Length: 176
Image (cartoon, rainbow, N blue to C red; front, side, top):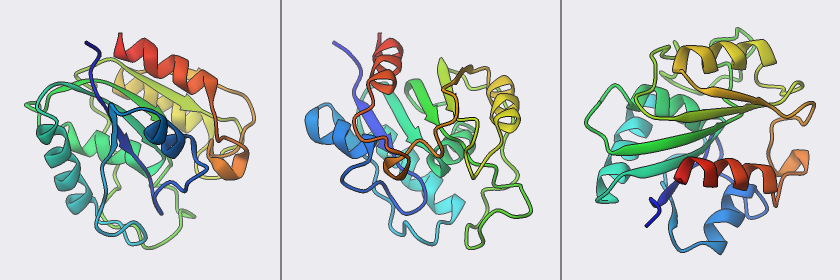
């Protein structure tokens, strides 16, 4: 039996046409971790909700994260007891950049500790929230495989990513 998947959206949640929402809608083994406040994220709160969602699954999970959700995972894994099988980390933003949008509390600095499970970082060459070299550095620090998908924006619905076959293949690889 494959591990269940927890959908971990970023700032603002993922709308109905986003690949995360489409995956969740089409697969009963996928469940979104819902944050209390999507527009004014507080890292400590997001991490607490994420950890509770992981524990509530009752068995090891695969995390499918987008944007700020990736950084929340990096903070969350300080608790090594969480049953995480693997993680797909798509478009991690550079929350440490001086021009990063305001209103996001406590996500910087980004932890640079090797993740204790297999992971893949997917990055775009023209992501407005992170340069490719920054994503590469995070992937290296986290012990993740980097997948450079070329110039495709923030890898969300606005960038044309509704159905996303490559993402599905990468996720299935991580699920085993």
